[in-house]
Image (cartoon, rainbow, N blue to C red; front, side, top):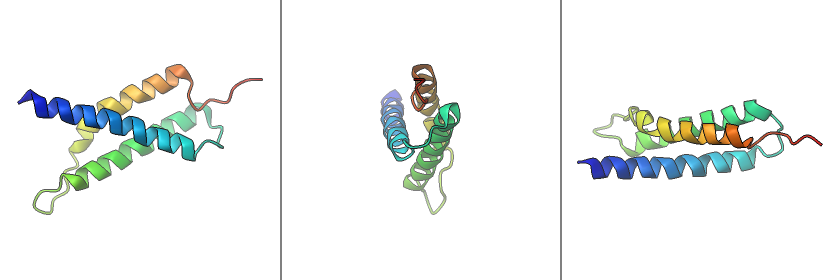
Length: 92
């Protein structure tokens, strides 16, 4: 019973990383510092919740609860990016 949950969490972890990196790449010209990091991860969470909810649609009802599964990996990547300073403008 635990294997599907661990697999789903692993997929969400990789998807959160990939989507956030694509969004960072798309917004590379914006020097929004911490605002950029928070915006990228918020958009990534919203996109993954939407995509996951639609992908897990049962009987025509979108499963918005997939956001519960996506949130922890997205939060981990947010914390990692804040600590690493990804998206910050480097001082010269």
